[in-house]
Image 1 (spheres, rainbow over the protein chains, first blue to last red):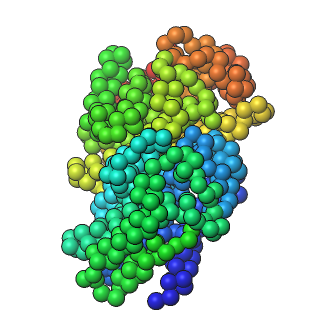
Image 2 (cartoon, chains in turn brown, blue):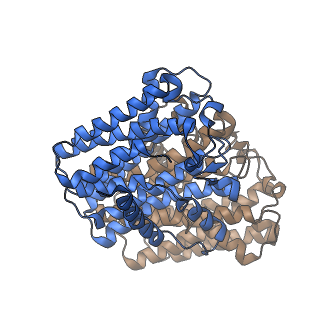
Length: 295
Length: 295
């Protein structure tokens, strides 16, 4: 399959849905609506929602049902980036080659834009489930999955430890714990949500969970590598992790070991879904894409 | 009825449920779990969840069903206070007589504690709905109500305008717009959610919506009054609004007009539920309590 074409087409699907679901940026008061859209439409890869759609496809589900949930996950991811970039957190000026939200709109609006996105994600899920007649019990189960992945059992705890470990020694198993929570839990949820909406059975769901965890960990290692050696497509200030004395995979294990670990995880992900037919090909290509990406 | 006793008993009900629903503060990593509990259990009045329970009671519903939703609303309220107190927002050092979250835990943890609470509120609703076998469609409808009240159509927009109007002239109708969004929308949702869970019919729901909006506006006017003339129970630094050049009801209309407006709204709230029987007595007392409170 032509991966570039596939990603472009999926991104358009996700972008069109986000466009429909988010209020226009001339809605009163304009500043906050502009801030919300600025971050949601800032050229993200849409990896998480594309994983949701690909997982649904892999088990023979209907993509249309998965789209609102895929968008909600991307919206939650976006809120986390806005807050993560704040001066009190990672204090980043650039994201995807553009000034971060608080640099453009100020800190107060950036905080509120993140808060609004976190809230609106659940509005979107609830509203679309009711409108499209999606199974309401399944939708509620998915809300527990997503909130477990994004909240205290997942992403927030990863963020806390990521900050705590600045300037502190970090053991390999602690670093993996951080990566699992900070990054891999929401990526795994993206895959699981698509699978569940597509009607995956228990063994399929288990395989896809293993797939998701492996690519989630690979994704974070590649992120850490790009911080060291990324080109201009990377779109962030290079060497930020080192300046912040962040615990990263390359800092702990070196560049070469990081590259092979990422590749190994990508292969592990593909092995987990070995028993799936050709409908899982996009997931296989995505596992490859995640370790070969340059931004 | 003995209002003090009623409030005490209801607060205990809400506190016990929150205690059960939130992870223990020795959960790893402890700092974030301590921060979450610090703000949730910092002596709040529990007005919003008590309104949810009282509204359910007023239409003959079962309080036990309403408790998780009441707790979720209190959790969302708590997240909004943590973020509102941040240096980039209102920059408050004290809340309910205690140091604010970022003064105790630092800004990064305060931001993440707010984020976690916002997320966990929806986890709580989804989980409890599934466990208790509550009508899942109703639960999803309630999620849309709460997120409309807390997100871009409600509280967040109120916060944005509240910040925008610092040092700026504010017309009376603009101030009411801010109060409706910043405060009254979540208070109205608290009442509506209880009513809907209790099985309110359309005319009951309409009456309770009018009740909620009136007490919500009254609540904010009293808040503004307490900022000027509150005693030590108030627990915040007095005169903050003036120092921040906030648009407030007393600043625009004077103390005397503010007091009568609050009282008028409280009476309007009671008039809205005039046709309800004795089971609405707690709501009537709460409307009185809101304008006579000293903290």
